[in-house]
Image 1: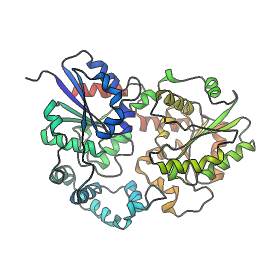
Image 2: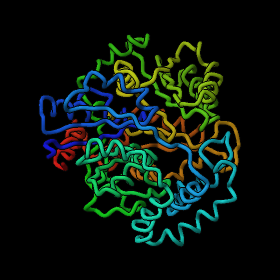
Image 3: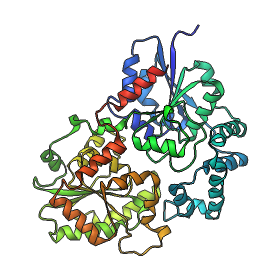
Image 4: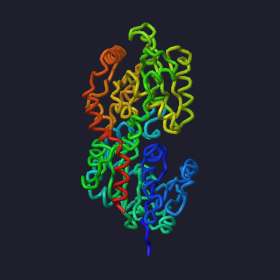
Amino acid sequence: MKKEKVIFFTLNSSIVFRNLFFFPNSVFDQLKNLIKGRKDIKVVLVMDEGAYDKYHEHFVSLVGDNFSMERIIFPLKKTYLQKCFYFFYSYLIYTKTTEMLATMGLRPDEPPAGGRRYLYPVKKIIALTFGRSHFFKTKTIPFLYKLFFKERPFTKVIDKYHPDLIFTPHIYGQFDVRFLAEAKRRKIKTVGMAAGWDHLDKYFLPFQPLKLLAQSNHIYEMALKYQCYNPEQLEIVGYPHLDFVSDPKYAVSRAEFLKSMDMPISARYILYISGSAYCPDEPDVIETVLRWIDEGKFGEDMHLIIRPYLGGRSTDRDFDKKKFEAFEEHPRVRFWKREAWGDLPNSINFMNIMRHANVVISIFTTAVLEAAVFDVPLITTVFDGYSVRPYDRSIKRFLMSEHFQDVLETKAMKITNSFDELFSAIDEYLKNPKLDTQNRQLLREKLLYKLDGKSSERIVEYLLKSI
């Protein structure tokens, strides 16, 4: 007879590693410490080939009686029929985000929808017909999924360990979707999370875990609105990686930080977080902001720190190199080109860059949430520098993103539509950093839940309670 309880924990993307494994006292750290020396609980970390090759060295020393790792050969390619079914169920919702992706795309250097923009009426019709049926989405689609996707890559590992609980922290990813399908076949209890705040408003997801741990009221509402969850399926826990971001023990003094960046003790600075190829006209914005700085319009000792977009594509890195090389030698510019979530000291440094910034300019990224932790004034630019672009190629199209609407509604982030508005916003915030602080507090309440350093603890408690 089986004596121990077994928890499967999936890891198949860098964002999951950041959320649950990377920082001290993370979800995995706490779970590992709780089961140390116990014989009644076993954790099995299940990874696809890419994640195993990238991360297994972090965990190999832990392997023992109550911890194991498993590498799964996962079928990435879909058959023609599988592609057709995937297309069909994905568009059972058609949000403003979906519309942007289907008709305009995210990247101005690529055609929308992979060059198949002509299919957008079909996508909308699917949502307006089959997508209206809760039963069809929650019952028929999971049934059909198991007919179309007959490969069962997790059979052997489940037969080997007989898990009592499967935790899928990336329900948007196909690895976790297949795991949820197998769990449903076998009636195994599941707990899941969306790895990112923009993962529930793009496409319909075919399987639901028995319980979804939502990071915020914002994600809770999107799960209800777009993914057919019932309130009793949802539990709000907070963003686990913000436990690390908000931890005061990683803060350094402003003087110490400025010294590390080779800035004078009296310096103030604007942090510019790049959107890379998504925002090709950024050099116009940066050049103009630097001209204002050089002209002394923001006072003395004003500087600019640029954080390039550290995208996975080599073309993006090449694009950024060309885009920013004109600013490399400017005496008031500092670059932060290191990966924030790949190395703990770098992560601590980047959190301090945000902590001490006088203003943050960012283009619709997760960094908005992280900067809001520190109550830093937030600005976004929704104009194309000195270019005149059609709406479907303009940065303005990002305003359609459903997951960003709650940010905009709080008015915590000042939207600028021209250089005049951008100058005024920067100038006002530098003169009065407390301007809009109540709006930023509202953003934290609505989009960040609790910043009490206990989000990871709440997740671990829920997992242990579920077995």
